[in-house]
Length: 168
Image (cartoon, helix red, strand yellow):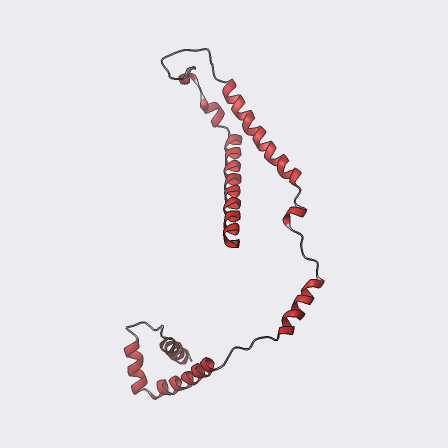
């Protein structure tokens, strides 16, 4: 049984023209010498020729109309703009903007602006201890969430551009 399947697979590859180049002479030699290969080849060629000569059937024009009539009976989901509440989206976006602004204000409030030194900045950057601020687990979680949200936004932006490009 295994060898019959192997013979048929190899012969179909040979008939379709996708057999490896090094296997074509081997198959041709087997077709010339082996009776089983000749019989299988003639059967497969008959099938191949009948497939090539037959035309594909197309459904009647009324079939398409019947299908569309049956689909029209069902309620179709409304567009996303109708069932997504924009106020919720704005509230979430505002929350993150306020959170980022709060972190920036907190960071600037920690700087001693009155010190002068050889630095290019109007404050002494050597005395800023970022280890207390940026070592927090909550800050890492916040930054990770912002990166994920940023990637999701970027993905949505690229999908919209792709959709508008495909429409044109």
